[in-house]
View 1 (spheres, one colour):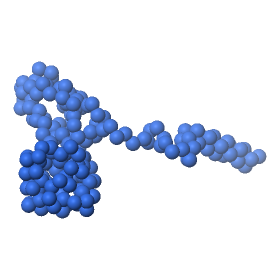
View 2: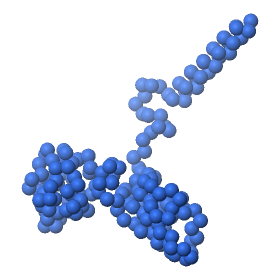
View 3: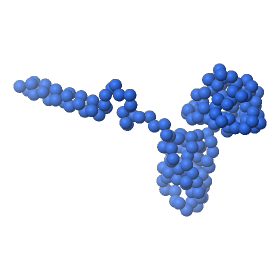
View 4: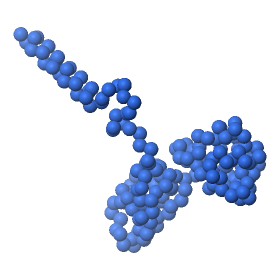
Length: 184
């Protein structure tokens, strides 16, 4: 009798687990991923450093402003301290925020861009209109001479409207475009 009761309880538990699993996850043939596993592409990646509790690289939803980052990293920062003037600036991919607490009434908030190599490792798209000669040289297949030609072309002919516009630079063909595409 005891064995029968255990078997019935085990069977009920298995059936209820199966029902909860299938109803909670939907059909395995669905093309859309489960809601809480859906990849969110509307995010920005930034580095936070300086006098913060947890420095590092963070991903925030698009539209997050500096004030939110400050409140998360220095929760006891008083509004009357310096640097709060950036509170409405919206974060962009590749921003590097350094918070320097100088004590008393002063906190400096410096906003720069991450180094190109760091952005490449993190998968942050590069802007071909913002790269200098040394930064172009970080890309595979781009040497000092080609990097200089790219920057000079941009100065003479104006900004690149798209990444594909790099083909107008002598020495950049379809093969090199494919090689660099993952970084833009």
